[in-house]
Amino acid sequence: MLAAAAAMGIDRLDAQLLLLHVLGRPSTDRAWLLVHDTDTLDDAIWPDYARLCARRKSGEPVAYLIGEKEFHGLSLQVDARVLVPRPDTETLVEWALECLQGRDAPAVIDLGTGSGAIALAIQHARRDAKVSAVDASADALAVARANAERLGLAVRFQQADWLGGAGTGYDLIVSNPPYIARNDVHLAALQHEPQGALVSGDDGLDDIRRIVDAAPEHLADGGWLLLEHGYDQSEAVRQLLRERGFSESQSRDDLAGIARCSGGIWRAVK
Image (cartoon, rainbow, N blue to C red; front, side, top):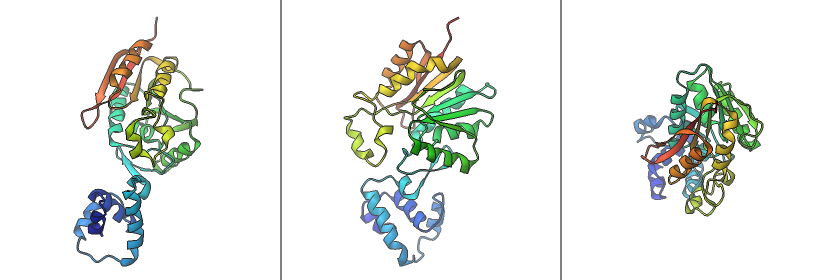
């Protein structure tokens, strides 16, 4: 069956994950496939497998097809109501955890939480943290809440438009907001994911501007604002942070060595 998937042009890893799914085995069980490589498979599973391969061929994410995605060591349930969590966003989580070092019971808010990936990863690593997460989409929040309940993580969720209605005194505001320009050619490859979680104005920075502008009113003195952004937006985001009065404006590289996250510290004027 893997050979048939390869003949359809399906990536080998994708084909393995889809096969494990139709076999009812965990997506982490690729070693089992290697051990049983020569086993005869029941022909009855072929129709389901072929349908999944055809959907993958059309560009539908594997995570939607199997209903899960691993992120920062957590298995998250995902579907077309939310973006698929991407490994590069783990860079944002690692930076967030660094910013929280030495802070007791830090207050954190994740904006545009989607599947809950960032908020849940932070809560999992820092059980003492008071983590809140907001999203404008009720559908996305339903996915995030289900993930939190299944993982036993006490993140507080609320439907809101970015920082609208949020409290004050946060040690960290973190977000992976929409940052793709509405005419970006890369959108064609993301047609199966919710466009409202991807597109942000003509230059992709509309939502980031709103977050940067509003964040100081909600941060504690010395609190951090961290943002994920596009591959070519780091300088623009750092400039927005500087203009708003954030100090130590800086960026972090993703797994490919591309500046993917930017942030700064808010120092209250004495």
